Length: 106
Length: 198
Ligand SMILES: [Zn+2]
Image (tube, rainbow over all chains, first blue to last red; front, side):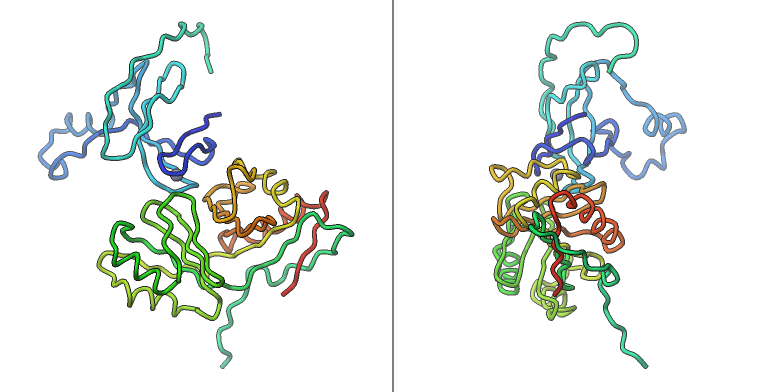
């Protein structure tokens, strides 16, 4: 269970939040009417899915109901940065964590 | 033809028998006038307009509430507040706010019929709420004048600590009110529950 620091409300239980997928995916200018099917498919479905640092969106659904962004390490699930919409701080240095054991992790 | 009558969502709930020494005191609050207000906290005209009508300085710090003897303004988000006024304010509250603030840069929505307020107090009130809420309600972190949108027994609520007794106001959707009321009665059983009738 995460304790997530809402940029407004402070630390709250994970059950108050919802996950919103990868952050900073810009909507196509003009609604995408002039995009090819391949370009549209890339915009809608393709994500970076990294092992490591991932910029992603969360919303404080049962609190202030505001969206914000976080940088999460997808290996350790650690939240390394939390920032408001409109901001985009540099990625922090990846903390040296031991290689995860094989098989299903947490 | 009969006049339409506003009915509490808890009108049919029976009064609970008082314990010898109640650790919990519950009361269904009267049908307050309530309005959801959205606007710019950096706009002095907005701030003074709200102050004029409610007597409260809009809280700009997250999770804080301002109160007078009969009005309250609760922080719901960086540009959103819940205004609570006595029942007799009725739908006039929305109209007075709208007249004063205009509607080009603010949103004023009457939610008086959407929410019920359960008042819960007594020496064990924190223990009762802690059974269904992940917030740290210890007085070092949650004090009179603090408020929070959160989950209580899986229901979306707004908690507002009104005084140090402690007394809390629990704002909940009308359709969840009976469920939450019964959950609280049950959760408070071990402390003894006294239900006050108006
Ligand atoms: Zn929040």
